[in-house]
Length: 566
Image (cartoon, helix red, strand yellow):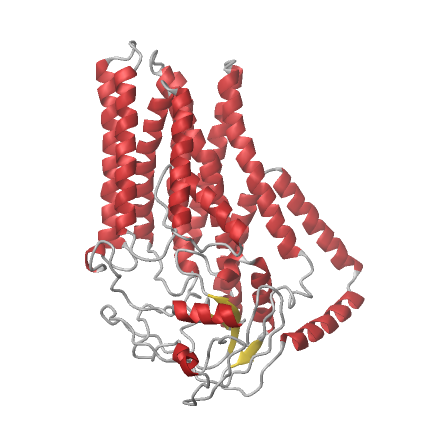
């Protein structure tokens, strides 16, 4: 079966042999089951995330009230602006997602056209037929819907409106993810997979919302409070420094936490990548905590002397990073304009820390970015040291400079620990042939995504270009070179073989008529909410939890062939 995000009904027949899937013995040893058990560590991680969220928000509100009571109205206004505006942006986005997800999904078969076909079965289904069946069910349900159900739906809308008005959307999503995870652990195999799938979607939403919030709120708040501490340190007072120091610490922990949490959620969502262990997550968090801390301290020192030049520096750095990201041709969103907005947002992230946005070896790009950040931190700190206030003692200045240097050195140390010892794909020393060469890792199939199972069997295929003639078995494709597109290609060498999961040879498959996005992008069914809604409907209706398969276009020749024939 196939699914298209544009809602076009497509009827496909599963009668040809796959040409893009490797043989079982050559398939990547890194295939894994994503529908794993929801563990106690997962529950504790969610609870700690709630604690970090409340600590960050409460410390900022307490500090804003303290500034107001001390009649520091300028600092009060800046602190409050960096609390309210990012929170409102996140609430609006979250409520928009909720409104789309909660709208009546009876006709969701047309939202992202899809159909489910059982493996090794001759029958196939059209989305047009499924739409008619869905329309019939919708009419029946509508005719029998009681007043109690309508009242319940109204209460849900009211509850969600109150939650978002009081700026608690993140809290509700964390609690909902925790509930779904616990339900997946309590129920049987069928219900477990259903709840775990929904937990993955909820974790993806909260990770993206919190990452946006931290870099719109926590990062500017961190720089602001550190700069205020630098200003107050001229006439040191422990009581005056405690509140901004507490707020800055909470913001820094929130930044490091969300960078690690986002990467964990992203890797957990993809079956072509190994998941991050919690040891790796902690080290990843420490890496960003210390590097972002050093970066923020350098910013705070510089802005305490050169406010205007700091603004010019930030804008110039953001423009350069955004251009670098756009030049890398990322593939994260479903449309061109969304991709541009995404690149601009990642440019904000690049002001503070590294964020991988493109598939492939990252050692060259990470090394270049680290050198740029190191040079900027040294320049900003040196300018502050040269032009600092005469009231600042030499001893205090040297201590501050050493803190910046040591923080960045510690962050770099944890970065090496993560890549050399704890990276899910293995040590970096043996993963690359050269700085920018091809990564010698297990080859994974970009066509298949299975949130609940092992890799698909050989009789499950992706849809070729619709205008090309389909063939069976070894039949030749008329048209000369057209047949070359579908020949089996030799796979590159893989790492040491790991225990291979037995492929599932039964059950339905949801085929999405889109090429699969490469890591570190989210799969389309996590980004496109129409696909997500349709997948949840089909998953709930199917007797066996289906697998997800994307269209396979493995080479530029295939991409060009598809684009020129559709």
